[in-house]
Image (tube, rainbow, N blue to C red; front, side, top):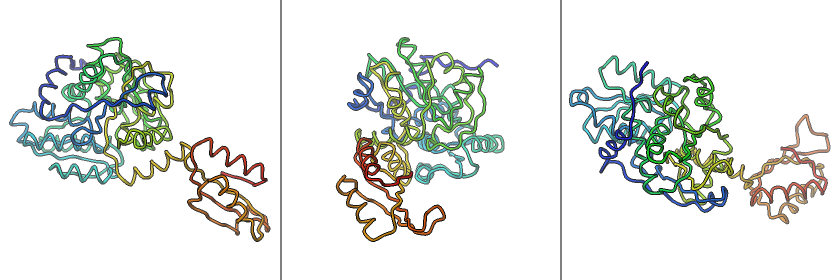
Length: 403
């Protein structure tokens, strides 16, 4: 099959089309990341884009180029949330009716935002891939135009405008790090950047639990994986797009993966040190910089691709990230069941300035001796060194500590 080509001229034309629609998002210097990799690191803040992510770029370019007849038929799309909002916003701007299929577990704020932009939302299926199949069926049944989230030349050209902006804002960029789901963002940015600065390295990042591109690149063709089990729902795509895969195969220098723990640590860093709210899929580039600090040639740019995160998920991820960074410590400690034993333990923790957040005192358990009790403690600590200090003192004082 001969796939359509996307050229630098297409990306430049997309930028002209997006004038007055998409904003040129800022690039912000990150001191902590710069110190981590030993050279300048900037964050390209697409989390500050209209509708909260880069997706509006590609969606608008695709929809704005439809004929009047196609606009009257309406458009249909499928998304976990960001493409949904981009399509809803773009459709409203050009006066087209939009229907969006979203997985049943799509975050409520993304569903409500999509509806607020004027789209009809249909929930169903366990994944984006199921929602895609339903959206395609809708298009065949009604004649609505299917707006693919990543596998279309206009969408890729729209996302590629981010690459133009990066090169204009930071001409000396050495490496660009960005997330890969279906591949539209990486393909578009790589095309624009490599056309202007062939020496710039492009590194794609996937969640370990949704690494379709690693498997596909190894096989030389798009293959299907099960993308379940990652908090990074925006890049949890089970199969790469045909056109993005071909472009990424030739234009992207490498693809790496990050764990859920590394994603949560990166999200905490963005909130705490960068004062930036970013969703898990949008922060995987930062996670890669933290996990592999010597693998990226500075000056480096990490693309924060979106900021649409459910506040409930944000609170959970922040707790997870703080635990990964040594800010929380959860332990089980066995004590002799006698008066004053718990008080002595708490006094020791107080001297170590470990703040007790939660405590559960258990006497009845088959694994305990008749003269033992078990105390489950959640402690607020000041970092990994402090955790190690607490555990070391408890061990030296003879406490039986379990995790």
